[in-house]
Amino acid sequence: MTGYRKGRVGLRSNAIVCPNPDCEELTLSVELTKSVNAGSNDIPHLLVHNSFQLLPQSNAKPQPEYIPQEIRENYTEACLILHQSPKASAAMSRRCLQGMVRDFWKLSKKECGILYNELQTIKDRVPADSWEAIDTIRKVGNIGAHMEKDVNYVVDVEPQEAAMLIELIENLFLDWYIDRHKREERNRRLIALGANKKTQEDDAKAASQKASLSQKAVADKS
Image 1 (cartoon, helix red, strand yellow):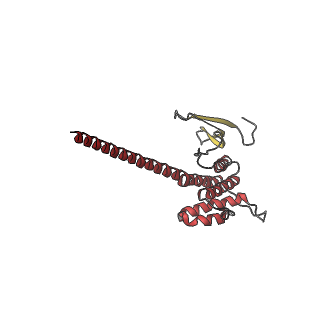
Image 2 (image 1 turned 90 degrees about the vertical axis):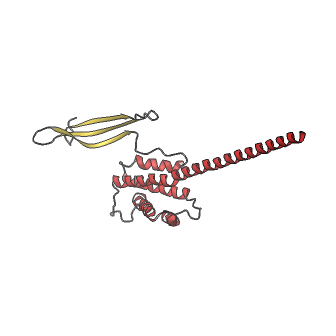
Image 3 (image 1 turned 30 degrees about the horizontal axis):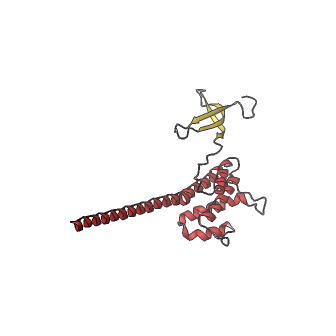
C-alpha cells in the first residue's frame, strides 16, 4: 500500500482456530505493518504500527451465569473499549465494581449511594491489600466517570492501566463469586453424602431389626 503519509505499509492477517474440540473458536486479527531496513545489510523487517482484534471483539473471558448479567455486561464493555477509550473502560470497571459490591455483600438500600461510602462499609470484611486494590478501581474509574471542574486539568488513563483494572475485576470474580460457588457446591455434595449415609444406616438398622424379629419368630415356633 503506497501513498500513506507514514510510507509504504501493508496489512497482515492472523487467524487461529482453537485446537480444543470443545471450543474450536476462531481468533482473527489484522496488523498494520511497515517494512524497514534492519541495518547495513538492508534486510527488511516488519514494524507493527497498529493491531486490530476482530474476533473475538475483546479479550473478555466468559463468566459464569450465576454472576448477575448486568455485572457481566459492564465487564464485557470495559474489555471491548479498552484500546479505543481507556478512560471510558476504567469508568466501566468502576461501574462493574460498584455492582459487585452491592450484590455480593448484600448492601441495604440505606448503605447504597456513593461508591466511596460503600467501600468503607466492606473495608473490614476484605484483606487490607485487597481493599487498597479495590479502591484503586474507584479512584482511576473516577477519572473517566466524572468531569473535573477545571477543564484545563486533564488526567489520562493509559491502556495498560485500564487493563490492570480489568484484571482486578476478573480476580474479584474468582475470589468472590466463583470461590463462593465452588464452596457451596462442595458443601451441597457433603450434605448430600451425609444424608445418603444416614439413609443407608437407617436401612441397615431396619433390616437388622427385621432379621432379628424373623429369627425370634422362628425360635418361638420351635
